[in-house]
Image (cartoon, rainbow, N blue to C red; front, side):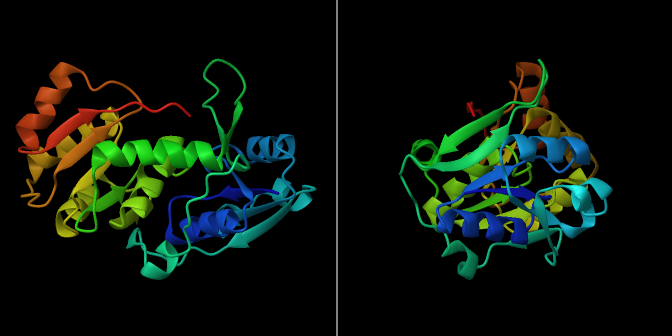
Amino acid sequence: MRIGLIGDNSLEFVELLLKIWSDSNCAVIIDWRMPACRINELLLEAEVECCFIDEIYFNEDIYNESSIQYIPYKKNSDVVVKLSERIVQQYSAEYSDKEALILYSSGTTGKNKGIILTYAAININADAICNYMSLSSVDSIYIAKTLSHSSTIVGELLVGLKSDCSIYVSSTIVPPKFALDNINDFGITTVCVNPALLLLYTKSEKFKSHPFSKLKAIYTSGSILRENHLQLVRSSIKDVKILNVYGLT
């Protein structure tokens, strides 16, 4: 069964995603920032019958008029929250050929295209990423990119769950200053960002520096972090590995 999931990063979003997977269903995830009419259109194309949606976005007439059953959920978590052991234990790796995810391309060369990923595909991919990240229970990962992208779900959330490390989930709408405070204060060891966001972090760090005593590595994806930008980052965020990585949805 294909079940829609619409909302910004939150504890509740992750819990719903894991519940969909624990029932061996397929999560159809669309960026909440898309227009409501387009979200509804894509869900209909994917033959979704029901969709969980953050109640703060459930104020569009089209959601009430649609043939899809939209189920509002309330986000009670703070801007940044650590996944509890109760939620983490809901995850169980599955390697079947059943559909696990449908994610959508950005539509830069035309209409948004739905990409179907199986349980085997996302878990084998996550296993490969675990091999080079080498995280363990003493590590912590900070998720700031939207969970509607495969790099975030597979390369961060699944990797964190498989590695038994602490997982901190942040809303995507957080000023760089607060994100840096969180990374420092929570003792984060691993951060995954795109180059544009990393440059914003770098500029913010020049106004207020942090010791980042636990931070080990920053992984960038989405585009290439150019050499001149890399030098800017290293001048501001010192003694941290910075690596370009690549993922294909």
